[in-house]
Image (cartoon, rainbow, N blue to C red; front, side, top):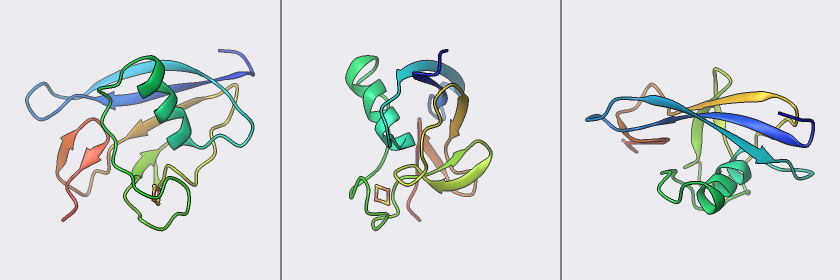
Length: 105
Ligand code: FES
């Protein structure tokens, strides 16, 4: 990990496989959100990484909720911090479906 990358530990898996923490080194870009970093992983490492989102940045759809470093928030509005390790988990209050996706009810 360097100051030009951000390390993401992301919960992967589903009810059948159980959760596994996967680690990804993501090149940092100025102003990058945690959701942007997740998109980078999908584009360059694993297109199967599941995440729910619609608006991508307006903080309007509220679909990108996750637990980031132990606190619930919207991944599109939380900034990635270069040179650090960030832990991204699905919401615990909702039924887990896959990776970062939980049920909407
Ligand atoms: S993607 Fe819509 S609030 Fe984050």
